[in-house]
Image 1 (tube, helix red, strand yellow):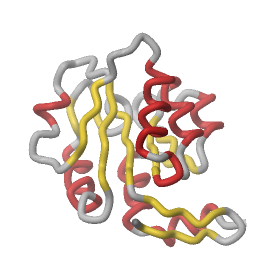
Image 2 (image 1 turned 90 degrees about the vertical axis):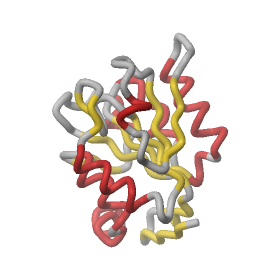
Image 3 (image 1 turned 120 degrees about the vertical axis):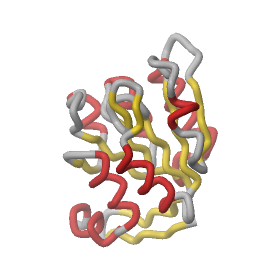
Image 4 (image 1 turned 30 degrees about the vertical axis):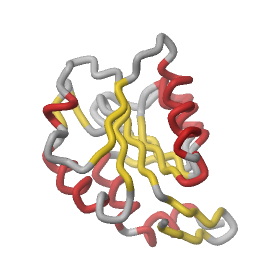
Length: 156
């Protein structure tokens, strides 16, 4: 359990990082090389989860050398399925990162919701549901490696 105290905001006790795939850590089904290295580092202290509809059918191969838990979405309502997955893990111990409209409830449910403004942009409702917004996935993941950056942004 990783504890991060953010003055006048929250004391986070994070165990899980839940990542949307396409548009967040991957583009057109291809996992970004820079993200692989950061996930390897984060896996030392957190359980990292990738949650995806796997639109391109590539996530298993792209993530095969990473210590991650993979969740392939199967319902017709991915927004609810993502939020349910977080609740099953214990949302109060999760950081969630995403960009799409179907990530809104996941980010809202998480102890820490991070929206990413990547190549695909970010859905407005997801942005509004997040605690913090980053310009790229690398910056978002690095907040979890270097939490003082997050503290500086979120403290009140």
